[in-house]
Image (cartoon, rainbow, N blue to C red):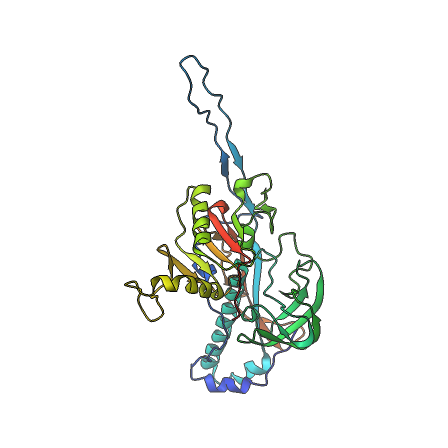
Length: 401
């Protein structure tokens, strides 16, 4: 959606020409995407192909002295393939603002650099949000039906200020509202304020505008953990391999049915990793802040009087059977993950986050407008070669923020 440059506050730019960057009040916390390793391979052409073995050629058995040897089988291989997803972040600035800074080019350049760095952080944040979804990204769901500009949602912190969203039904098959802009949000009230009054029903979901229009079956966004650690509910195929016929290509998924987390459930899922694969227990567990609160209620009475954890709240770090518990604010509120074989980031050659340039400049003339624009792009996806060594608990009891 085209938008002009709002110059109403650009006089304030003069106040930061001393080199001090603006104070940032946006929540763009880095998380799992930044921590995931970059794969050693690169996407070449339209796809990257790899090879996995799902069956050996051994004929093995105990026999008697006069018995024929076991009949050997044949190797069974599958060839997963992954395609890149295209991400782009854009930034614009009017010629008026450029003229305002022409008397102090060095200081103005610092302002532009800060603007570009801010856009890059927003783009990185978007990738962080997509890590946790399926490829059909949605950022929050309505928790009540209302006709208003203000709506209650389940995860207000996921919605980006001044971003446009479409609203879809709960199965993401029908667009209910087109192009509403988020003007503000309250995390404590879990509410979002839109640019106009619209009717949104409970359970309907906010999707970045246009991302489900003419989208491929798996979506336009990168293939995230809900599709990677899945039993076929979200993704019947993963990396073009059918999970209904190749059961060892499924992730370990548990539906908690709205119940709170408990120690036996966590240990059961950790044990399944060892029963299901050759991997050991994961290096950490991860969840949203809300699941941490349920776990603290469960574990604090057990440890608060035990050294060396006998602090006021009972903890100096959160552990489950010596496994660290990490918090990611973009993780779905009703899920806990354990990954012994986490996915890796995979890029095309020279496809990491880069600015589009022309003649060495990152700024281009914006056609039809007095202004310039800049773009940062990436051709990226996630790949997991052992989804069966990871678990995902979902539909856990969720507390209020």
